[in-house]
Length: 201
Image (cartoon, rainbow, N blue to C red; front, side):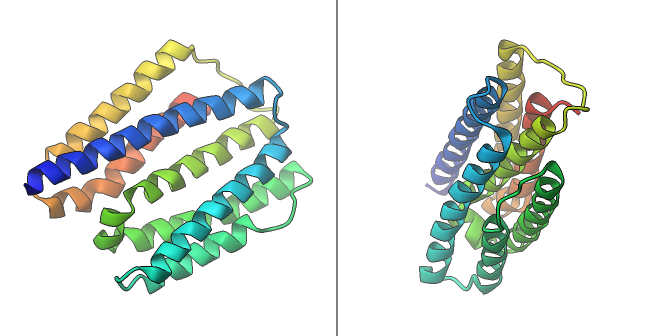
């Protein structure tokens, strides 16, 4: 029974990764077609993820587990997402850096609390998704960076390979403790593959 539940959990996470890949692709497409100005997209992003972190904060407050440290880190991220409007690329980069540090700090706190990962695994995917969107915006705002165009089908294959590798690496662990111990590392690796597909560096 436990193995079946674990497989369902992994399939749920993999489905979330596929949705993230599609969302990142749409986000990048809207920016490249000029449907969204980069600064407007940044502010919409901060608002959207600010709302999401608020929901996660409420879950942590009303949860039965002791997630005080995680709650504090979520609040730190909320503060960074609520910072004022970035009018220049320099201010954007400064805010992006602070948001990135808040995300990293939150991820470290989550990594030490497997009960949070177990009940909120998609939160980690959402944090990785936010980091990638910030990278895409950073690239868009800096015209001096060399642009590398990737064909859509090649990108889809690359992302699907990363997702399948993630799934296989998690499934290869024999116990739930081993799976949760490697979950965040494997998720980060998968999103690094996403980054290579969406951000030309």
